[in-house]
Length: 90
Image (cartoon, rainbow, N blue to C red):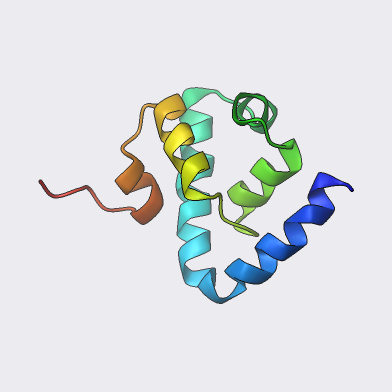
């Protein structure tokens, strides 16, 4: 099965969260650009398809929390900020 086709179920689960997906996508896209990391490199590092990463950066789907945690580590970001857009209050 094509991994992009497998994303359909993920898309269906996240369709109600459009207002959350788009800001997350913008943060991911901006973070990749600042770090000079391509979607292909991030996909290899995460063990997912490049198509999945592009879907995340386009706001079509959202990455699972485990991927967000690994992305935050890769991009040297706070995972709470990456997922919510807000700084974590101590």
